[in-house]
Image 1 (tube, rainbow, N blue to C red):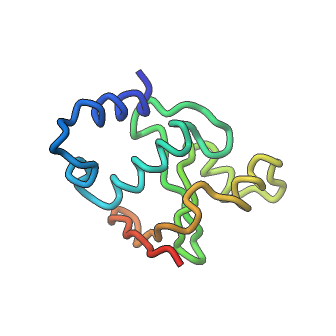
Image 2 (tube, rainbow, N blue to C red):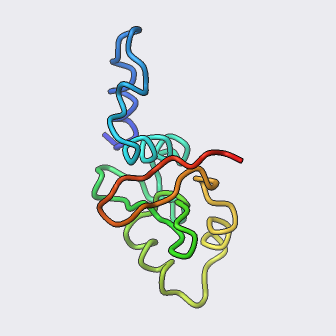
Length: 117
């Protein structure tokens, strides 16, 4: 079962009195859950499927701290050091799934939701 399938099963098992906000305990989890849904449980560049949380990292722009999306570890490493990005990588970087909704506050910390302008 993919991570997205696991998440959908957990969300669908909530009773009608529950809300997604109650299900999400931290803003980092919220960011991850929303991006998992929007990205179809796949890497934002190579589209490999995530089966567990260790399969992805939260990609962010180190200059602006804005979250871009979820990437597999290989694409995240390649994105940080390549001088000749692929067309898929350029597309991801020019139109990231997160669309500037969150900013990254630091390694190991939570992600804070950024207000839409």
